[in-house]
Image (tube, rainbow, N blue to C red; front, side, top):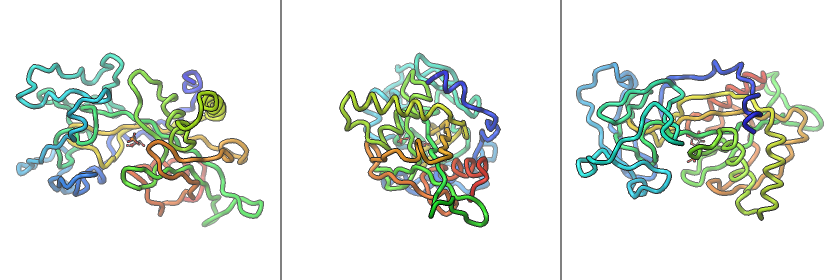
Amino acid sequence: MLSACNRLQVRHLLLTMPLVSHVKARGKLYPGTSISRQPVPDDKVAWSVPFPEYCPPSYTTPVVLQMPAWADPDYSTFANWNVTPPKYNQLDGSVERRSHTGEYMVIENIPRNPCGRTGLLGRGLLGKWGPNHAADSVVTRWKWIDGKVAKKDGKPVMQFVAIQRRDCGEWALPGGMVDPGEQIAATVKREFCEEAMNSLSLTKDERHKLQELISTIFQHGEMIYKGYVDDPRNTDNAWMETVAFNFHDETNDSIGCLPLRAGDDAKNVAWLDVDKEQALYANHSMLLQNVAHLKQAHW
Ligand code: RP5
């Protein structure tokens, strides 16, 4: 799949947005907690704009502080002064600590969110200081009604595979964290299989067959985004980034007819219409907009 990934067209890499403005990463309450972020007005998001009153609370979930395998050690407190900080802005062992947005600032060993202030210090629910890398799939097909592709405002309507997140109930693109050393193309397939096809409930044999099928039909993807994610879990010191690929089924005879079944972090899965009114998690709506634009579809 790595070679398939290399073949992915990157002509739309310009859609990469190094500095999207974050909005959801400034939501009042931090997800799953009663912790309020310090409000950050739009004109004070940029670090370059002085904000002398800026003194946000700090929060890192106890789960992260217990240091599961996917989390960095906490070295930000005096008690942990002897813990060696990660190697930022580089590949640190098998952990990717480079950002898709370019080099980020590290102040006294603590990374600084490249998209500006979020009103919260610490790592929140995120395991890694700095960028936390994910990969997403935008699986699309045309919407057919009575033997014809449906149209809205004169443009063909697309549908995409959406999962409903178990943590917040919001609809989202299937996607997840890139494991250390894992190729992004492998993450995309694995997460799609787990969340949209419930592969974790299959026997080893069935899972193997499913992975082969998905590898075949996911061969011709197109990278449609690479960059910062406006994720509600972001903080001033830890944030989500993603690489997203579009897999489009032009004739509704491959991905378009796969039997979907929610699994893992997803409590529901469905084909939803691509439409700007469809609320989605983080900035996933912007990723879909990129695809609608590329395919000249209704948005
Ligand atoms: C988003 O969070 C990414 O775009 C990806 O969809 C997701 C990864 O986090 P988990 O679903 O693994 O929590 O920022």
